[in-house]
Image (cartoon, rainbow, N blue to C red; front, top):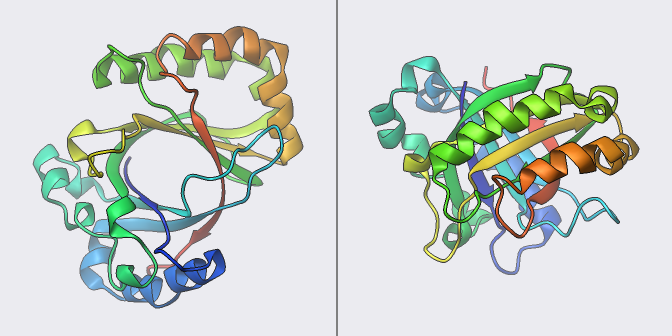
Length: 234
């Protein structure tokens, strides 16, 4: 699966609740009613960033994150590059989003734990280690780190679902002063307490946290707690 991601910051002077209402209001309605968009997008999700959680989630860097599943007929490299979904958030974006602080890219999905998408959704946003290429990062992320996660006892007990999203570097669009992400790790837990238990377990520290130093840059990956809203496209 190829998925489009768009990170959003609300426009200056706009309250967080007003951002959310405008984003899920006429903007989402216009997209859902756009036949060309529906032809390309199999699924459209708005993930609203949630406040920080002590010892688990820092203050959010973003106000929202768009996810758009792209149909298989639009996954060739030249099609991805020229896809209209890579040019704009969509109608009425100036009502709620700051276009100068927007990051966009396509990514390839790798499902590690194929469990239910239920409960609490947390995203981790890694950048590759200095001196490594996007291909080297992606290979280690999938073949080494993904395997370690799949075998980790704490995650097997507490994590419902774990999906890696490998960024396609040729599709990245961002401002010049922002270093884009190289991946998105998507976690689902039944509760924040389960997330704490997974990430504080001795086996996580000894196996997974230790391996992150082999391919993830410094500072460590930012975490984002989100409230997902799937917009019907039918």
